[in-house]
Length: 374
Image (cartoon, rainbow, N blue to C red; front, side, top):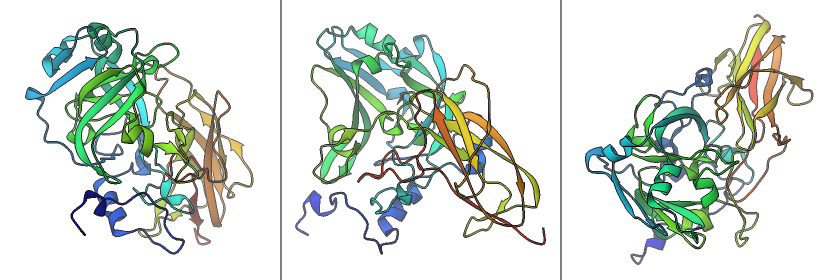
C-alpha cells in the first residue's frame, strides 16, 4: 500500500460462487443487527430490537450543544437547538422502517456488503417536528427543487471520504399531497432517541427505505439543482451492470414476514412443531400503498391460501398483523407468506437481482419439521 484511501476502500463487487461470508462482512454483521423474527409479535418494536444499520460510526452527540441548520435556497437561514425544536408543535407517527439491503445475503450472485437475510426491519413511533414547519419558517425560495440532509457520521466508502448525505425532492420533503408528512424526530416510542437510532435528531420519511431516514441530522440545505452526492448518485441505485447509471432506490416494496412457529434448532434455525393446529402469524407492509392481501403457503410455494389481515387503522405507514391456521402433519415443510398492496405490487417467487442487493422482497421461507413421534 502507498497510503491512499483507495487502498483500504475498494469498489463494490460480487462474491464468487464459492465465497463464504467474509471477515469484513462478519464485522459489519456484528455492528449492525436485525429484528429477531419472534419480535414481530409486538405492534411497536422495542428500540433494542429494532433493526440497526450504521454506515460509519455512532457520533459522540450531546443534545445540549446540538444545532440543526436550515439553509441554502431559503429566505431566512435557521440555526435551531433542541429546545427550540421542541417549541414547535410536536407530532408522533408510527412508521415501519426497512433497510434497502434487506434480503441481500440470499441473492445469487451475492453482492458483498452488510449480509442481511430478512430481519432488517422494525416499527416505531417517532416524535418530532414536521419538516414542513421548518421549511415554512425558513421560507423556501421558488427555485428550490431538493432538500439535502447531512448527518454527523463521517467515513470512507469506495474510496470517497464523506459525511452521510441524502436528498429528497422538495415535494416529498414538504409532505405535499399525496406524500406523507416527513419528521425531524427527537423521540422514539415515547422516550428519548437512543444513540444507535440517531440521537439527538434524525429524519423519518414514511414509506421510504431506511437510507432516506438520515440519522444524527445536523444540516438541511435547499438546492436549486438535484443532489449528486455519493449516497444519492452512486450507492443506492438499482443496477444490473457496474457501469449502469441505474434507477434510484426510493419506496419500500411489499413484504410479509412470518413469526417462525414452534421452537428452533440452535444452529440451523429449523423449526420444530407438534402435529395438529398451528397458528401462523406475522406482519405485512408496503411503502407504495396499503397492503390488501397476505397469502400463506405451507408446501414450499406450490399452493397459496388467504390469511386474515387486520383491519386498517390510523397508522397508514406501519405494518399490519395477519394470521392463518395450519394443521401440521408429520414430515418436513417449508412455510412462506407473501403480501400484495392496493397498487397491485406483490412479492416475487424468483429473486429480483441487482448489483447492490437492494429491494429484494423475495418471499420468506421457513423450514419446519413436524416429528413422527410428536
